[in-house]
Image (cartoon, rainbow, N blue to C red; front, side, top):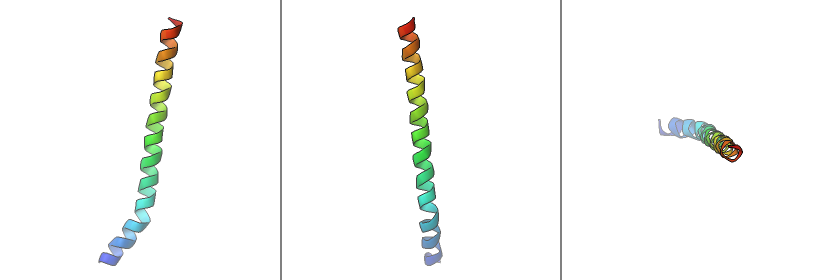
Length: 45
């Protein structure tokens, strides 16, 4: 049971970590676009 659990975690954890990382970077990218857009609108009046 423990071996199966270890193998399962070993195979799924990297993909989960990668998914979390891409999701986080996507959110940061959206935030940067949003703030750049806000700043551009404020500067342009």
